[in-house]
Length: 178
Image (cartoon, rainbow, N blue to C red):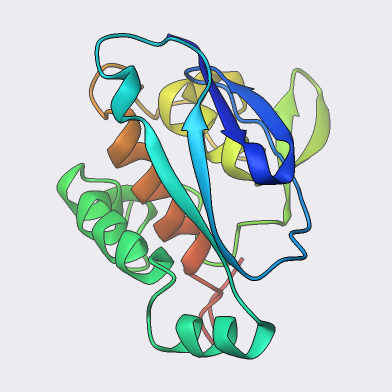
């Protein structure tokens, strides 16, 4: 189903497609609450697809973030639980004995990918992590065997986003080997 993310006060609209990552940037200049809608008829619950964008002064926003209001921490915590539940930690955790890439500090960094006899580098962003979970043979980290199973049709999109948020939140541990 196609959605269309729409914030009339900002005069922006962006189509949203399942399984596709897109970015939309805007710089709101007026503090307050602004309505958001789905502007594409997307099914029976289309009229319920509404929300609010809260624009805050920078100081208020910083206070909101430090008080845990950002939601990323809670989402990452849920992602960590899913990381264990789906047995990702068994291979990619810090105490794993399986020869698999460790994920501490990987987000935003270049990852060497084996492409036949060549090695190419990709940045470990949301798309790379998502594809690594759902389509693991598509980008195998250099030096590792392509043995990770696919979690396509096993991990739903909501859980996948939480796991990605967890991976984004784990930084390199002191003394950890890369």
